[in-house]
Image (cartoon, rainbow, N blue to C red; front, side):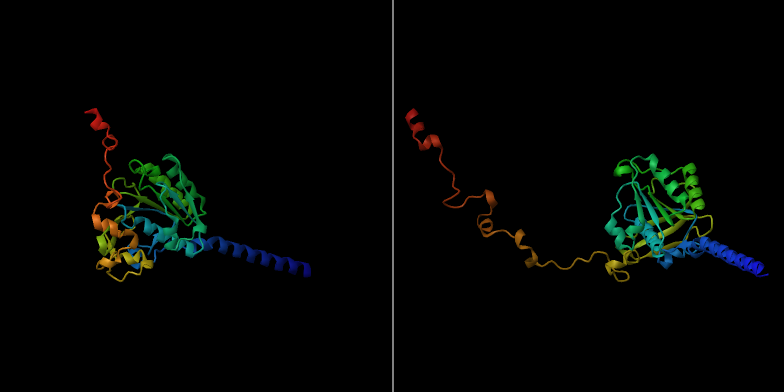
Length: 286
């Protein structure tokens, strides 16, 4: 009887362990279903309340429209949950100090810089499909090495990217330009509103929300700048004439003759007479 009781007790322990393992395996997906940017107006544009995991989302916009900073915000959100991220840097222009300033943990970011155009989409597919990364960013805003026209993601490649994100369970963000948008994926368009701020609009979405738009100040993207609500990025104050650094001030001798270092200084830089005239050769010849 004791042996049977021990077997039953051991079986219960094994079953408890199995249940615990199932909970741990399911925890990442149930605990982190979306990546929130920390900007409520942007998160509210999507039905899930943020960037949904397991999908491909396109951020399309001109340069300096906030598209890269918005992607960095999503990466920083994943890092706050102690998750890994990857960045396929097609233009090879990601600036690590700027990323760290937005909360990106560089120790948890894998940076991939393909050498050929064909490797960009392939690398993003492999990274997203692996399931090791909560967010994979594919930057297609410019050509490799910042040369040539930005590549366009066709429908076949877009399906591969979307399938990889679904299989891996992470978010795949595509950064594109308006002249070369991607096909077949959810698209958000970012636009600069000048010194007043920037905007995000849902252009394409199968889950609804198409046409919704949010306008935010730049301080929402860059809180470290300490800008007040509605403030401008650059505030130019009155120019003080005495504020010119000393090394830019004209020295007294320049102000005296107005000719700079090529000018003549009395008794030192006067025009020297011709050697022929000084030696009397010219007069002897006559």
